Amino acid sequence: MEISIHKAGVNDAERINKAAQIVFTQTFTPVIGAEQTAYMLEKMYDVDGLKKQISQGRNFYLAENSLGEICGYLSCFQKDGEVFRIEKLYVMPDYQKSGLGKRFFEYAISLAKNLTPSPKCLQLNVNRENPAVKFYLHIGMKIASQGDFVFGGGYFMKDYIMEYEL
Image 1 (cartoon, rainbow, N blue to C red):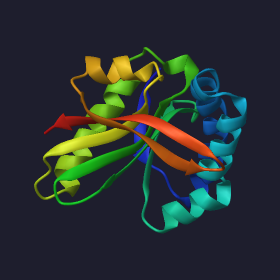
Image 2: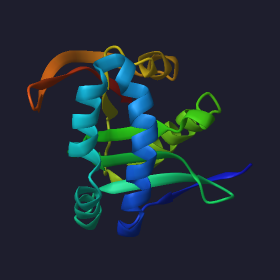
Image 3: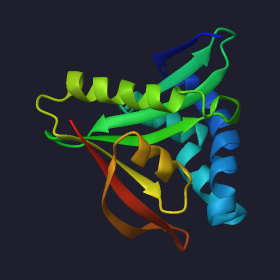
């Protein structure tokens, strides 16, 4: 089945929310527990909040199969003149290990080179216990640093900050 990637619009906010309910829950419940996962979902994927982010210029990209089903989503932005950040990169369970994660990563590299005048690196945060750390190392990212970042509600994000030189 063919998969296409396209920029999401405000009307896609509800679809992103529904996809996140599945993939975010599956990814993070074993790592940070159901309570923190639910809290983060509410804060990061509220439909109105997503609409606001998209309408204010936050870029989301959807991977869809030929039936119009979301296979994954990506959100990225230019942090400054030299750093392009991947904020979200999630692949739906049925499409994990299909090459879509790598395809999204390559898509983000392409965006960085096209949208940033002189990008030096692609950067993202990933929970230190997230199995995706192995994926990111495999595709050439390096762990630049780590930290425990306040998320709110008494929760922390215990992340690696990973970078890929462009």
